[in-house]
Length: 67
Image (cartoon, rainbow, N blue to C red):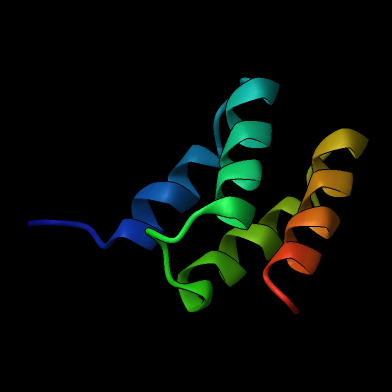
């Protein structure tokens, strides 16, 4: 069974790699290949990340999405 794009991307926020999580957020803020509505749950999850840099990038991504 295929998963939706947002589910697959949300699973990347579970990565142990700080770089993977940060890069995902940056791409969401700049991309045109993911709907804004699919990005919101991912950014919401990032706002509670243990790493302050990830939380900061989540805020930047929110702003980039016009939220």
